[in-house]
Length: 221
Ligand SMILES: NC(=O)c1ccc[n+]([C@@H]2O[C@H](COP(=O)([O-])OP(=O)(O)OC[C@H]3O[C@@H](n4cnc5c(N)ncnc54)[C@H](OP(=O)(O)O)[C@@H]3O)[C@@H](O)[C@H]2O)c1
View 1 (spheres, rainbow, N blue to C red):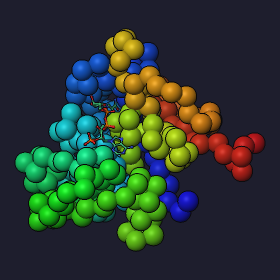
View 2: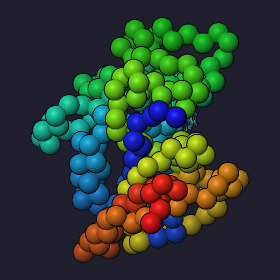
View 3: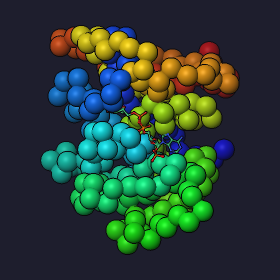
């Protein structure tokens, strides 16, 4: 499949959780972690999130002007049903063009309100959207910032090339329903995905920045 190179970024607790069972905003890491996320955003031509993360974290999906970004990445939001809150800040802030992916629209789905707000609405499966981003919008690097259910869908089609993790081992959430980077505990993947450590940066504050590169048959040593 022709698609962008796909990066993910997550903060995880000592027990591998990315949020609490009630999916509260994920503010359990340091300012350094936020700064690192913004630096990773600068590498991306587009950012991708699920509707749940957009709303839970009240994201504008932009890079602050003081970081002098070369450009603002496209802002891509995924939903099955395609119902978005037009009063959300992503529709009311300066930034990259908003692209809405609706994978399972109802028969009478009306994209017009979102298009009138300046968004581009795509009604297709996730793999087709990834292909379109690469071939029609020239997106070479896509950063997926979660949440877990969206990353699970990417993992199921083996579409994760780099994983950036802040291991925040100073915190434990617990609970079988608290999500991991691939969402709540669920069925096994079609196959196990292997990654190689490419960056290891322990910090004085009890966190550790880690980067892993997907090991595919062609890249295995
Ligand atoms: N620790 C971290 O670094 C981190 C990072 C990101 C998020 N989080 C946390 O994770 C929690 C949200 O997790 P989540 O798993 O609920 O979020 P999510 O994946 O962002 O959102 C779930 C929603 O996104 C849409 N969606 C997800 N996967 C889809 C797919 N394959 N196809 C079509 N639509 C899809 C659906 O929207 P519709 O309901 O509209 O159909 C779904 O209900 C929040 O608490 C957030 O703070 C933490």
